[in-house]
Image 1 (cartoon, one colour):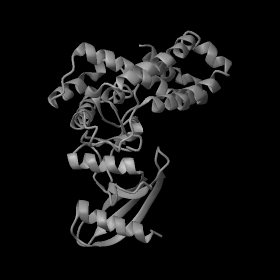
Image 2 (tube, one colour; image 1 turned 30 degrees about the vertical axis):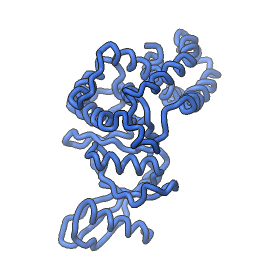
Image 3 (cartoon, helix red, strand yellow; image 1 turned 45 degrees about the vertical axis):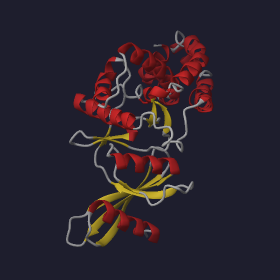
Length: 309
């Protein structure tokens, strides 16, 4: 049975986003677990005299609600949402349009060049529109020293210490291990400095991965799950889906179209610093994949190479 408050939320959302006709029937579909752990519900909405459509509900924290509201008002590439409250610090349920599409291909897989261009343009638009808006985004957590050290501990040091107990891992990656370990402290200093350069600070997603990017059959791109959003350098969002400097070309061109110009040498240097961080921050998933299946060696090497580039 659907909770009464959920029914009210879905009726409100249908009225705000889709139709002015009364809703005749609401049917509950699959209840899923999102990547962040939040419960995601899907509902079939049948208005009187019109074709049915689906809406999605999820629990969202205050940062995600505020980010979605802001980006929706800017017309950015996020699902249209109905958000009742952006003040309460408690997690609250929101409803949004159900975008039908597929998740973006994995970083080592082929991606359609048009999708790649559309993703780069959408990301550049978000970064440019919110660039140097620290006062307006004062509520947004920052990429600071505490965040960086905690991230390194959680996403790299913990998983790394465990996998280093496996002899096969030490043999397979012997040439990488000492260089990766010696790069960690230097990386923290570099990335902290990168995120103190006010010229590049903006609203960043901070958790871009295939599960958080939907691609429609028309090759439109939508960014999902903004609960990890921060105020930081736009370079931080690039390496997970743009793993080489050459692959940043569509983003760089889009940034120029948005009125943001950065010299090629400066962009290259700062992108490299962001790559170092991305390698450590994404290491946990690569190590987990390798432990399940050692044939995933290329995935581990990919993040190692970003750390050492």
